[in-house]
Image (cartoon, rainbow, N blue to C red; front, side):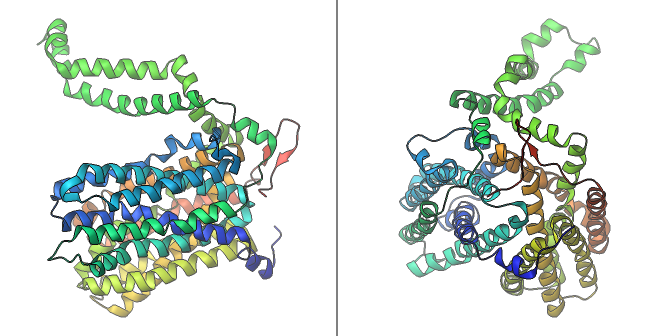
Length: 515
């Protein structure tokens, strides 16, 4: 495998696309935090009940299910704004919606207009998730695979800085404008959100000035083959299917069907009196209709990108998905209990916040930037392996810290190494995911793959507290380190395979360059 020089690697950060991704990362990080942690502080300071604040956190489902409407961004050109190009038009629309939504939230006092505030927060979350889809697709199409890590590192730098500004900075602004813990001031919070609404302007200007990615004509024709009505129908059917399938099993479990099987109840009585069984029948009918031939045809805009991935990689697709699902397993599962561990070790909240925000942020950005350089220099798979190995190995530093008590120097070392390896692994993983996606369905496939990346870690992470209670922190950290081993084996397996095939076109040429 040929390697590029260090000068070529550094040149990856000197392109206009890198600066554009830095600004797009900045405006992507603002709304995400403003509708989660910062909004929760605003609501609590306004005297809103904890239960209501908990329900408000469901706004985050917009980010978890953004892949559902991602095909729209691949396959439908916006009217009027579409003159800017497929990616820039969606970016401009979503960024404008975020800015207007934040401005609208600034006009709402949760003590008097809580429903309106939550509704506008939902708008901001959906617009922000749409912006994330468009940014990912733009990044995938603007540069070839070897430059994706540098673009991802630039995006991450902007994102992390704005996330810090939208959390700690927002609290500072609200306090400075006159809203303190003992004296709530709605206009102070309104002024704060209005400031962040104006901070979306750099992203809007960047979108208008940056160039639209050049996509081969055939790819554009392939992406535009579904009508808008067909795409909207596919989203509706997919939502119904996602609700009806699990509901079918839960309602069957809640019904008295066992009494019928045991001969203690008649079928007529079951149908006439058991509402759970009637709901089971309703959900079963809906699921059957969605999975019928007509339903599968209506799902074509969503299923086509999935089938494209399977057709391109065939039997390797299963192993590739296994690598994707396990790559961030080691550090994500540990991260669930990290802050709890710091508290249990005896560190103060000020020490934790100071070390994680200062050293953590700096080392994450350094790790991401260094990863981008290494990938241009040596390729994706070697750095993907190093990132995975480092993420798992740094978990052993947490194991060492368990026997050292509240040792501040060891905390600094642990967080610094952990965040550096996380930044390195993230930039490598983004480049890897980017190399797997097809230009025809870049938005949809990347949204799906990134969702798969978080699914297994979140499921296992939900049991992290149970593991700590049962086995203790030392065994837990050793377990999380071992979780990285399967991923390393899968990376070694792929490195021994033939290089992934480029995308074929109908005339026999290949699409390998993302210019």
